[in-house]
Length: 217
Image (tube, rainbow, N blue to C red; front, side):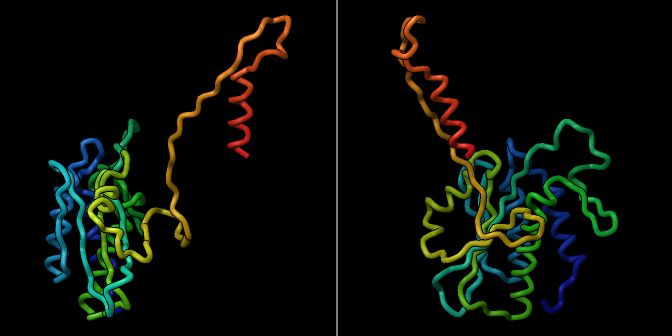
């Protein structure tokens, strides 16, 4: 893309990383407001969507040749804690060493958030008009339940979405699916029997073992 400047992307990334959004407590709204200021400077339509105190999604909208279907690009802005191992540098300073960048959530996923923001900035500067509208959603509280994404859906954000690009790290490969999680509670009910006649009973533990083996297969 014309006028690409790696230093501009790095400046955006440093702004994202230096804003502590470790979840809990998150403090995502502080970062969302800083990002909104950057979008406003570039002339991109943006809003901070307050969900609850201190927590907010950022939504930027880029008009295309046609309104629907909409192309959604997204990433989350909260991070996991810095961990119990001492860092060799301040995790919220975003240090560089050659082509490497170090800081809390550079990979997962403030690096891609910075990249997505910068692409929208360049599109605006170059007067690029995509074939359809593009919406950028920086979601809060991904690390503990995807609450920001759920709020986006509940407010009708997915109503006209035709495709989604999620900036999670993937070894620089384009993947056609996004990993999620499902939590289930399974109950196995056995039947007691005298030790001399085990064939009349049902061992619930054996049933659970077979279930886990089938699940793994």
